[in-house]
Length: 168
Ligand code: SF4
Ligand code: FES
Image: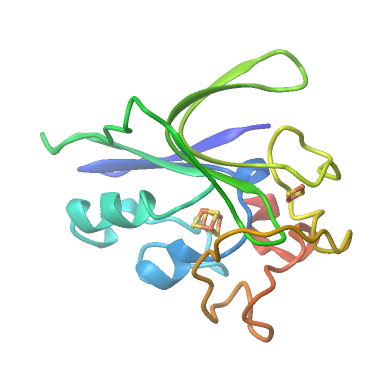
């Protein structure tokens, strides 16, 4: 599990591929900043830092985080975390949580998507194994739109092997 930081003059954006659930909220939100096929795929200074920060906080998995250098407010996750089951998928956590990984390392996150199907190979995080596992359970719908990570089916993220950011 590695978090890579993309440095900007006004804001840094960091990304952990192993947390990403590939729903593409970042790509849709600011295509000039987040571009799948480009290297680096994140250009933090390509938009207003307020806009970059706002789109980063739309990342449901906590894969994306940011740090401001321009005096702007860093993310202030709620001290009370809320947990929402997503239909046929993970538990969506919003708020500051400490997650203990299988290797014992504690990850502090402002947002997270946690496995509830039992099939993830990256527990306790969701890795989309619920899709081939055809896990079904009631829950809310996460807003998923067509994007470069889902060029066809609008309700299915691409498999992680197909995401070009794998070797970001
Ligand atoms: S979980 Fe979605 S918004 Fe977050 S980095 Fe992955 S594709 Fe982007
Ligand atoms: S809920 Fe996504 S892998 Fe288990």
